[in-house]
Image 1: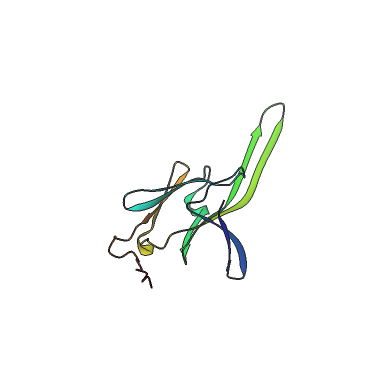
Image 2: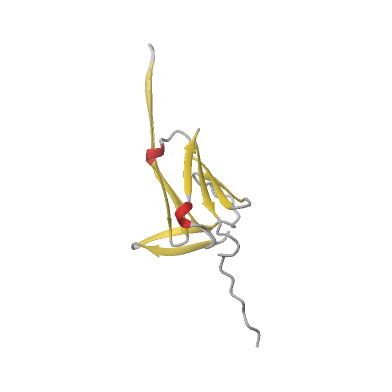
Length: 134
């Protein structure tokens, strides 16, 4: 798996290339990334959360998805009482190719799935550098 370390705000993070292959490590949230005609589309499975508990940020070529999961369930019955809690924060960071329109990124959270659309620049605006051969 292609992974890069980068320094931001004096905090060391792991960034994955959008084109990397996931190994056998369990990652949360599970993420699918595909390139469609005019955009990259990211689907992250984050069930049981509210959209206010999820942060999505794009900065300097990196897309970050993070949040804190808080879960509590209480089960009271006549013959027993049980309370279960699950807490934890998560963060996934992906290196994104530079050919996107950063100011047009949109995110939607519905039925436990976060969808992020990163529109591609028009072909004329993509950076192409011709290399002179000497």
